[in-house]
Length: 153
Image 1 (cartoon, helix red, strand yellow):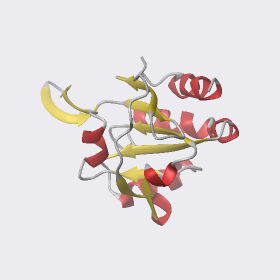
Image 2 (image 1 turned 120 degrees about the vertical axis):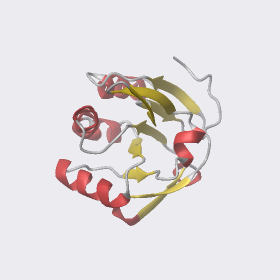
Image 3 (image 1 turned 90 degrees about the vertical axis):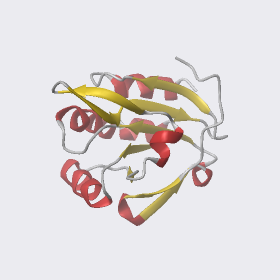
């Protein structure tokens, strides 16, 4: 699925490592934002480990990687340390980026309707435009598919 190179919404949010991340601050390089539901859950842990394991190849392709969820910075710092992540996790407790990218959906959990993040990934070009998006992501081999797209740029 292609987003036909739409401008990406800008935001500025706190991230692990004492950083603040904004799209404007990332101009000049390609960026992957992967939105995931929750730290320390099986699917999110597997997805994050896949991005971690491909991180050197993303770097070699000139692309930064950031994970985004509604978890607190403290939760993110623990998750990052536990998995030995070489990239930062962005805390979106107010759902600013989640709403800007339209990833909040009603989902069924144990028979109940709950609002949550639909696992989604966006590749943002050096000019701040969305080059590609994946929604309703299935974890197995997803990070590799994103990497192959980035390497084709």
